[in-house]
Picture (cartoon, rainbow, N blue to C red):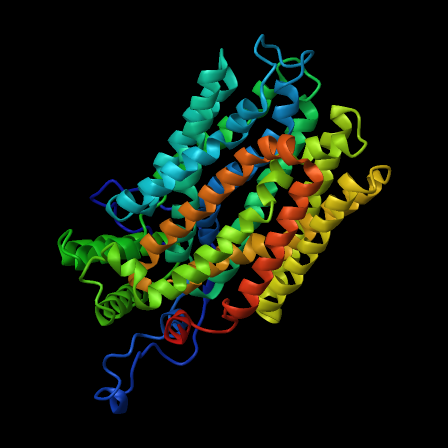
Length: 517
């Protein structure tokens, strides 16, 4: 940075980072309204494109404010991938390295879904503390919970301590999956905000791939499951230190001041310094002008009043809640947690007799997810949300019925199960995977977005935990074939929901989406 902003007088005070290539974007001024529009348009919210026209930012300065929050998603994905191999290692009499390896289906479900139950608590905590602590501090707490949970899980002397560790790790997941998209959206330059939010899903999938690789490396090592979980601890430290170093969200700081939690002139000065750091070599005058635009936008949408719980289930937010919660609910109850967490186990039963063979194919699943997520990020703004959802969920439906057919009628065709899994994973990453998270960040009205998003995240993890925990007992009760057939029927219901309920938001500003609801 050519000139560093003065040190901040709060806990957000940190030094800037290096010199950066500067990008100037201009498209005809920064006026929100013309003089002729002043009378009749004075209550219309500022258009999102207007502040963007004034933004100057450095590409390298935008990387770290995205990277450190995105590590929260990577650690979530890593837990999914590592648990797939850890369940095999933990239940092995040869490689578990414990005397309590003979786990029941219920105990296995607790190990697998323990982090998801913790994520439920993390989502509830996010609703109550997120607006008070802010996005940055919420992510710092998340990294601490990740670290303690990973350490306890890896070092667990007995089953009970392991479940406690999984629970604490899950609290970190719940906090991170709420705060990370909020922090990225509120600090990223408007010109690249959409791409960065979509890339967060890419980091989740990258974490899954790393987890599958760790599972393959340690699945035939004594106490290998301990190494699988311990491997995540360095990333927890990097995330925590990085978030302590980053500034708070300027938008959150200004929102708190407008709602009476701080001195507005002083907070405005701090927010300006934070935004200077986030933009790199941006002119202080342009940054100050952008802060003024943010304040003006906040004043137009009555941000002075804090949102109440009842408002979340009224009017536009109720419609957004139906859309967002419906998407994340069907995202989970179509079998996604079972396919991911039990991928290695399913592949073993499909003919890959060795644990190492199954975990190697899990790596193939991870690579496929990574590729298909990249494709989704590239085409979602061209094709739209609805076409990808309808096409992808149709593929999910077909693959689930194929899996059901394999387990009930075609038990000798092991290749069929592998093909069905690959189709399922690819179609999921084109549809529910990235678009579910993208749409819940788009459809909620601005003033209620933080709390609405926390409810949607809660629904996501609640349904995820339910399906994951119930998979093993239901598999024992009704058989794998009927279970996948049930998932297929639910997938058909989700297609009906998408076709009739979910709107197309491609190319619309957030204000236009809110108005269309």
